[in-house]
Every structure is written in structure tokens, then in C-alpha cells.
Figure 1: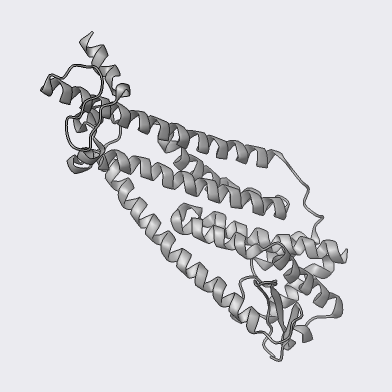
Figure 2: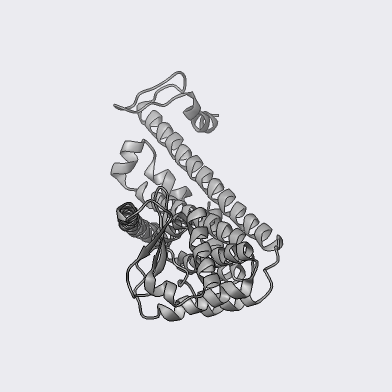
Length: 338
């Protein structure tokens, strides 16, 4: 546990540095899925490691040890984690969970508000055109989702560019990209180290929609022009939707659209999968070591109580209310007597 419990922290740091840079060079759709998996696994690893480290300190509190029926002295003697580290882990864990709760409430309200706005839009078609000179274009999640475009935005685009804009927003709805955004924002709230990954994920979603629009129209230049003109038209205008063609780093998106389509490469994904596997395996190993540590402390408590009561090491014994020394607790005691 001394080493394995810290491995998820190292994996998180490595992916936080490398994943955003690699994601910009990969095909956007698999990159978005890879970033989502990485954020989810590392967030679980971060929380699990903090919980295991915090438990080693909490378990040494006499009241907790009494309820758990284990020996504080044995746990303290075998536990390799400093009390200060355990206390700091407990504080960070509580802060992370609280931040996650706040972010979850905020996300739920945002999605509910978007769905309500979607349901209140006039008409029943996928596209809703607002009679507004302000240039707006965004997608609202719902059942089904809706694409909202203002008259002001349509007037600033040509026919092919309008088609590209709608194809972009339709790709957001078809791919349920708002779920990806929610996942990244929640994991970043739980672990602040994942914020760069969340930002890279949002960019990958915009690139994903760009590439789908380009594939549908068969002309990458038209999509690049539509993205650029829409962004220039809406400059300084607040974006009311969760997803919009004017989102992300527009110059980088336009540059990518003017270049050939990104090639599919498997090596970065294989390396990332290996890192995530190491993270999961290390967390499982640390949890197993923690369980063995507690079980050993329980056996030590059994041996101490049996020694004070002079009870024979056979059968079952109840030194106190709510405590039971079963047959699996006699191993250490029997070895010491022999």
C-alpha cells in the first residue's frame, strides 16, 4: 500500500500534462471518448486513494477502533502512512466531495433549464429560427434536442455556410455532447488537476462536430469559413446554449479544417489504456493491502483480549458486546502460542 496508493496520483498528473496535448493531434471523436474515460478513471482513482489514506488516520482514533474491533497499537505499528498525510488526505477528500456536490447541483440545474427552454421553443421541428438581429447559434439538449439559430446569424452566412452551421449543431445533438461536458465538469470539480483535460475535451467536441459537418458537406473549406464567420459575427455576444459552433478556440479549429483530415493513430490510445489499467490495478492492490491491515489489527485485538481473559484458543469467544472472534481470527494467536 505504501507505493500503490500513490500511483493514481502519479497517473493523474501524467495524463493531465500529456492528454490535452495529444488530444489536439488525434482524431477528435476517439480523442473525446479517450478523454472522458481518462477523466472518469483518474477521478475514481484520486478519490479512492484519498479515502484509503484518510482511513489509515481515522482508523487509529480509539472510538473508531472500538466500533471496528481492531487494535490501535497494531494498526499504528503496521501502518506506513504518516498521520499528517492521513489528515491532509481527509481534508482534501471532504473538500473534493463537497465541490463535486455543488457542481452536480449546478449541472443538474443547467441541464434542466436547457431542457425547459427546449420544450418552450415554438414549433415542433428540429430547427428554431429566432426573430432576433443578434447573431446566435446553439444546440439545446432535450427529448429530442433543438437547434436554435437567430435571423441575425443566418443573414451573415451564405447558403452553404448555413448548411455547415446546422450540420455542426446537429452533430452536437446526435453525439449527446452535453453528457461529455457534464462528465468533465464534474470530474474537474472533484479533482482540480483534471481542469486542463476538461478544457481539451470541450475543444475535442467542437472539432468532432466540425469533422462530421465537413464529412456531410464534403467540403472542409466551407465548414472552416462558416465557423470563422459565425465566430466573428457573434464576437462579444454571450452564448446562451451549452454547445455552439462559435465555441472553443476558433483559430485552431479553422486551421484544422483547412488541413487534411486527422489520421487515426492507435499508439497514444494504447499507452493511455495501459496507464489507466495501472491506475486501477494499483488502487485495487492498495485496497487489498488496507483490508489485510485491518484484518491483522482485528486478529491482534483478539489475541490481546484472549490473553487478558485467559480464554482457550478454541471455538468462539465474545470478549465484549458486539464483538466476535471467529475461527479465522485464531491464526496469529495460535502461532504465538506455538
